[in-house]
Length: 133
Image (cartoon, rainbow, N blue to C red; front, side, top):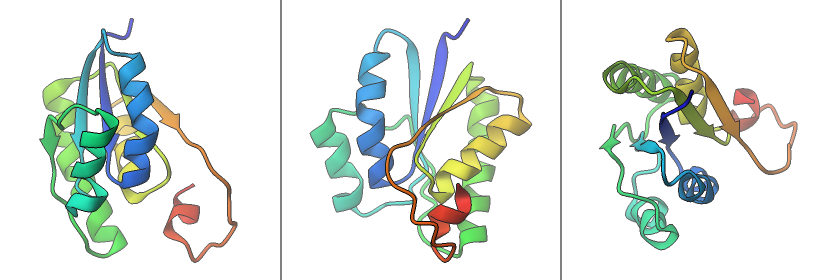
């Protein structure tokens, strides 16, 4: 039985996708883990405020960097949080570096993962998101 859910959010599109899911699961024990992949107030905080998302329980603050550096920082931070919180389910959104990092960490810790996605595929393998898919 699922009683605790960790939502991993890293970018503006993740926030948009997560808002209705978090609201619909309102009675469950939920944590919002922000990776900080998008850290500018106009790409992050404003969306938390306007979409009615709860303040993040943690912000890893990974910021910018190369793809490997950013993904690795998310993985290290989330492994710590998943071990500490022991969620029954990790929900990831979209196809950004935070998403692939969270899904991999959860899988390695044997935590079930739910993936919420919407949008078109470009099939342009020069785009990091297309590679992550």
